[in-house]
Length: 116
Length: 114
Image (cartoon, rainbow over all chains, first blue to last red; front, top):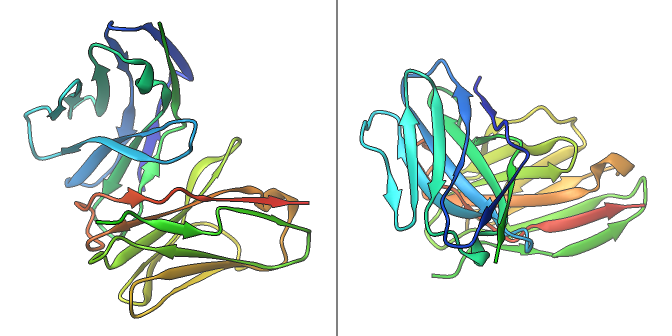
């Protein structure tokens, strides 16, 4: 079984600044994938970025990057040049191997507000 | 490619009734997973279907069931509705059931039980 913990219920940032959202996870599997999803007020879950556990290189997607620390089981999301459209709930999620077919385990989410 | 679609988008039911929600995956995707989202419990995994077979199930009572058709479309059914079943139900599709697959979500069905 895996667990995902997001310790920051809410965060805020000024437009154009940088913010980092934290996530820790626990799994006994050696192979797993980690994801960040965002859920804006429309409630549509949108993939932000994903990271394969066996890759040491941190994933990057435009203004979004992760800091993946496998030994510490930490997977934080950095948003650079924050935009008003980044305002959303952000979820960290894990999909581990074994018998976890099609199962994402989510953290409790972090509400991010970008202020103009 | 069209995204994941869910119908209906909103639903109001009364306690004791049953409800069926539908999910059409992205074309070519064969795995469909269902999640329940509530303010108190967050996002919880219900079950996953691949090639018309339930491959994984979360910790929900037997009132929650689902199925998948040969075209990969999936339905979930909740019988004998309870107030606590009020939630946003999300389905997600992926190409296969492997843990390396990215899941793409539909817009959700918001269920209110009165």
